[in-house]
Length: 123
Image (cartoon, rainbow, N blue to C red; front, top):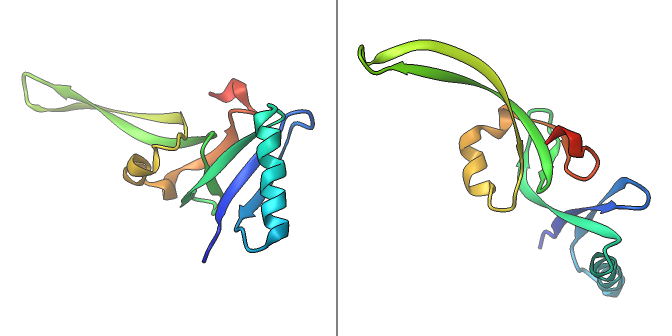
């Protein structure tokens, strides 16, 4: 059985720690309980892996900030045609409900540029 992957943001150190919550033995259970206590105390933030990777092969976690290029098409109502193509770079924060929708955003075209804890200015 494959475990669930998480990333813990340790607030006082301002760094991330990745781990697999596989629960294969007593040591794993003790580790998980310790981490959960830290979450309860507000010392860390847990982010779950959503099961997808960006274009560079980086795992995407909830709380990650991703960038991707889109082309907005401006529609001419009178002529019923596209009158302008406007390329833009969008930035989005990944939320747990996102895996349903993120597949339609083509994760292979996305790039993780940070997360909401380490890079709050990039939101």
